[in-house]
Image (cartoon, rainbow, N blue to C red; front, side, top):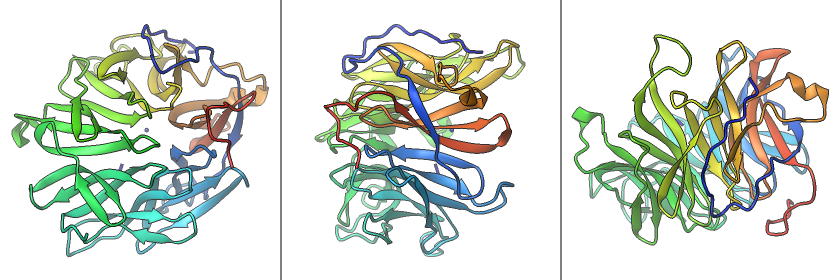
Length: 387
C-alpha cells in the first residue's frame, strides 16, 4: 500500500518554470463514496483518482474511485477479485493503475496490481509474464504511452527492483549499487522514471540505508543525492527530467517547542541532476515538507509543516512556482465560503496547473475531502485541451 498564513520564500531557479505569480483558482469539492476520501493522481482532462471510505466512521473497506471532470461524477471502481482497492495514477486516455487487496497463499502477496481500462472493466497485472521474470507487485504510475512503473521481484537477481511494465512484459531498471530499488513516477511521455534505490553498502543491519532518489533514462541511472541525510525519495518527474520529492536533512528536531524530535525532511527539486532544498511554509529548518508532483511548467505541489498564530504545528498544502512557496489554504479566493476550507495536502498537478488537493471543512473536520483547483483564465496553449 502506498499524505498561520505565512508564505515561505525559497531561493532557487527553476529552469523549466516560466510562471511566477500565484494563480487565482476556482474550487470544486469532488464528493465521496460515503466517507473520507484521498486523491492520488490527476490527468490533463482533470480526472482524479484515489481512494475513499464507504462510511463516515471509517469502518468500511477502501474503494478506488474515479472522479470524471467532464460529467462531475464520482465512480466507484470496485474491488475486482478482492475486498479493498486503491487507484494511484491515471493517464490522458483514462487508463488507471492501482492495487486490490486479495491475499494469495501461493505468492504470499496481499495487495495485487490491477489496471482499470478506459473502455470499462479491469485487468490483473500480477503475472506470470512471458519473459519469465518475477512477480509484479506495485504499479505506481502510468504514462500516456501506456508504460507503467513500480516495483517487482526479479527472479534472476533475488531482490525487489524498480521496473517498467507494458503489454505483459516487465523490465528491470536496476539499482544505484544496492540490492533493492523502487520506481515511483514516470513522465507523461514515458521517457523519464524516478524513484529510490539502496546504495552500495546498504544492509538489513542499517535498515537499508543509505537510500537515494534516482532518475532513470535510456539505461542511465542518476543518483540525485540528498540534502544531508541518508535518505531521499523522488516522487514525481516531468518531461524535461526535472524531479521532485523529499530528503532527510541530517537533522532531528521539533518544528515547534516539543520534546518530540522526528527526523527532519525537506521537499526538493532536482534540475539537471542537482538537488535544491525547497524549504517549508514555516520557514524554519526544523520543520518538514514533501514535494509530491511537478508539471511541465515546473509548478510543484505537496505538503508542509506550518505554524499557526497560536504556535500550533499543522500540515498545509503548498504550491511552488518561480521559486516561491505558497500555502494553498491562505490564498485570496474571493469567496467567503472557502474561508472554512483547510487544504492539508496537494497530491497532483496537471499541465494546465489544475491541482488535486486534500483537506477538510471546519464544519466537519473529521471528514477528509478532495478538491479540484482550476486556475482562472484561459487554458495554456502548450497543454492538451481537457476532454
